[in-house]
Amino acid sequence: MSRSLAMQKRFCTSYYNYCDIPLSKPYPTPAQRRVPTAPQAATGSKLENGTRIVTQDNGQATSLVGVFVDAGAVYEPRGKEGVSDFVSKMFFRSNLQSSDFHIFKTFQHAGANYWSNGGKRYIAAKVEARRDTVEQVIARLIESAFIPRFAPHEMNLERERMENAAVTRNHDTKKYAVSQFIDTAFKGTAFGNATECPAEQVDVLSHDDLINWWSSTFTPDRIVLAGVNVSQEELKAAYDAADWSSANTADHPSHKGSISTGGIPEARYVGGTDAQIFRRTVTFKTQQYYNDVYVAYGRQGPGANSAKDVAVQYVAAFALGGAIGEGLGAEGLVKAFPSASLVGGILRSRPENAGVAVAALAKTVNSIGSLAGAELEAAKKTAAIALLAETNSREGLLDFIVEYSTPSGVGLTPPAIVQAIAEVTEADVKELHEFMQSAPPTYTAFGDLSTVPTITSL
Image (cartoon, rainbow, N blue to C red):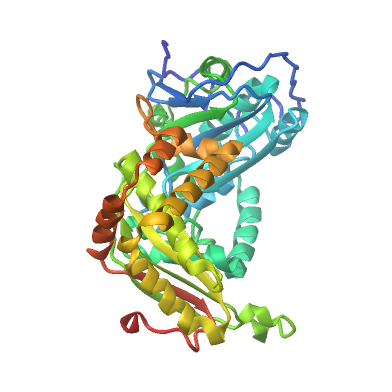
């Protein structure tokens, strides 16, 4: 597919509107009738400008499309922590072509839901809509990715929301504990950068910081355009029809960002501990359950380098959940990155029971190599069912095909990993155990820690 990188319209990185179309002009969304196709396997391709397109068409009439930009927290330099999260939260604000009202009305006419989020690896923006409106949805997504405004009044509104989020961040205790678990495991490295903007950075990050970050990272070679229940042909046609699809932001003289990102930083696992005492009953006196303790314990796994590596980690996670879950409120945990992962467990306990529960959690994680027989077979079945259930949802499948996509297509598929899970042996589990034991443990605890043991006592 031939594609010119030359700009097709006037362009400016100022937060004012310089386009020829008034922001009050209504945006048409003509209905186009398309008949859903038969289910197809995941496929990927790479355009001449470097943009990757990954799709899996299951033949349904509701599509989920997304723009994934390889510009997440792992790339943030010192002093700019949180900039990727800030940019992700501004994704569906007004741009140089359309106001946020235009964007809202387009998605409303398409019967769409839309959201964005930042992560360790990607800034992602997703829209779920009728399949016959994919072209209009993609047009707005491309605008948001290639010509943002970062208007001061919109940034101030987002700052208020981010400040509120920072104050209440630890109210979702399990999510907070898992986040701290990951950050502790890679503390002091790029992989330890928090996925949410730190409270102290909310007022520090400026319009210029966002523009510099966006212009340095939102380039075609870092962008994956993905879709579920849409074909390669449909997604490519919608991308070609978008006004700004030929834009290469790095070519514009105003886009000379000062941030150098390079490739994915090496994941340097360090392990360690993080314990935070917090008794919410000081604030919520009638809600005693807020005294509960959340503890995560685990070690480094081999990562997601092959279907076998992914499979054995899934099996271990569900074996851990089964072994420690009964009576302890614990579950197995595996968080994988492209080059590293954490395998372990997380539990919720009353303070008086935390000591016994944490000791059981650590013992189970450290003895995973003894998994065999009926317990192994049960863990394999549970892991396979959980993976299929996770990727049966549109968003789960979209995230999966992007995570395992390569410049030449899709590297791993759910059926391939399910097959690898079925082939996991006792020897594979022992090999995983030896790998995990070769690195120090990671241990995080949050809540009333009066009876929680130290890592040295475990």
